[in-house]
Length: 425
Ligand code: SAM
Image (tube, rainbow, N blue to C red; front, top):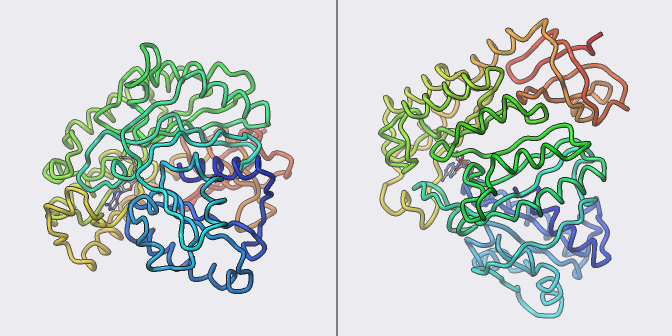
């Protein structure tokens, strides 16, 4: 979502005549678009700001802005900690970003815009971080009240975009060379609940799927409480729609899930996964987990470990619980799992996922998969990297001009994090 929002803000600046600079030291405006989900993410912004300050000392006209959820959460406090910041624009102020930047140029002291609900700036689809793949926000905000989560406070109530607007954006992207689109929502399954009848995720997937020239379609993130089985059928039946479901359990313990106010139990989560696999047998499931949630016992944690094995996730993202100011868990539950315990649980859960990934990767050796070529590998420019429909990362030798194309790759080897292969036939 932050990549997409960054592109929206860059679109506004592009329209006003700005060009992108690869060197922060040369830029007139540097915006850091931020996340507030964990304290660690916010601390990283302050250390990044320390670096930018050196550039600003050399170029006092440089305008430094903090945008997004951390700006929304902290507001003026950011300027108190980093007085050289000129602009603080929350996650619902992107629509005003040019005016805010102009005001910041003129004024003395930081311009702060938080607590608003402005429509985001219009997108220039040519402003992208990737030539062939793109995100599209289909809804913003979240109406769930998971006790750990800051998102409802920073991004507000859930609001869906008109379906026609989204499809038009897909068409424009495809006309500009995009082959894979990922639809984004904090809680994508409930897309349409504030829209007229007939605008829901099922219809949206069909409408996007019908866009000629689009090769792949994905969506994130699913909340188990809102998942509808018709979507599993869509994932099995729509050829461009990838069968990769990112459906964070957060914990494998029903007791912890209740304290998180997630609205489901471990058993219900397993039922959802079972139904998904029944309807979409080739589908893959990916997870987010929080470890060290207040009151999480060793026994609770072991249930997260066993869930990783029982489901056999394609991938698990593991986060140490971080109390976010003002959230229900921060207000009502003491952060009572010591940091070293959180760190050890984090490692153990990742190890469990590593074992699962190793076994899944091993079972793929010798089989061929459709892969979208994402470009040269980060480590070796002579090797291409891509992803299967199930979201497995694969490296293989091939000509650079395959970038952006769908190719068949046979898996020859693996590590716990990725696959290696060769172009098939
Ligand atoms: N909207 C999605 C959902 O509810 O599943 C994802 C939101 S969040 C940006 C991504 C992940 O961050 C969550 O799935 C959760 O695992 C993690 N997260 C959220 N709040 C957290 C907190 N207070 N401490 C640690 N991890 C957190």
